[in-house]
Amino acid sequence: MQSHRDDLSRLLTDTYLDGIEARSLSDIRAMRTECQQAEVALSYLRRLIQGRLDIVHAYLDRPGDGASSDLASLVNDLPAILSSGPGRPAGPGRLPMLLAPDTEESDLTAELDAVLDADQIGRLADLDVGALGDRATRLENLEHRVSADRRALHERIDRLQAELVDRHKTGRASVDGLLS
Image 1 (cartoon, rainbow, N blue to C red):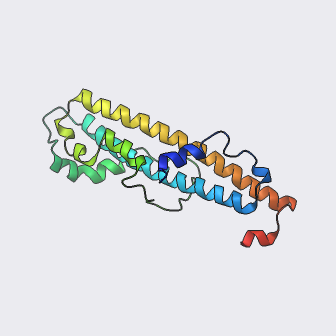
Image 2: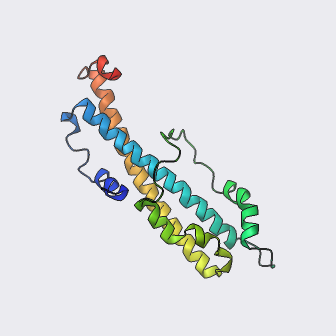
Image 3: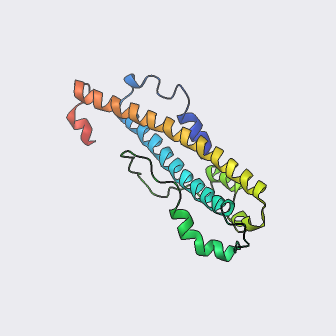
């Protein structure tokens, strides 16, 4: 069975789009769909990373006055922590096909869990500032890599979509092909 990471590597190769001009409409649509599905999975993973990063930052930003930093206070503060993260960037964004793809227990989430899994979140109060900072840095690095992969997928999706549109505009594809 091929992993999510293997699929992503194949989609992100420099040669993935080679020869699209000669491919059939159904091949191009299939390529676009697989890129969209991979992008949805990465988008979900990115949201998981950002949530965990927000939690780590909440611990890093806590006052040093002995304020409660146990698991119960984390659970109490979780809605505020997660809603106070960075806002959405300007722009129209993209409507996801799915909000939560089948990435649980996958090789995509395994790397995130290696940095900070659910059990470790419950023990963040036990970590010193240096260890918390290290977790934050590792999460930020992972988020940057996932974001770069998402951008590359967006470029492929846009290129495939442009090829489909161009074929219809120039008559190389029939209107009937739109409906299939």
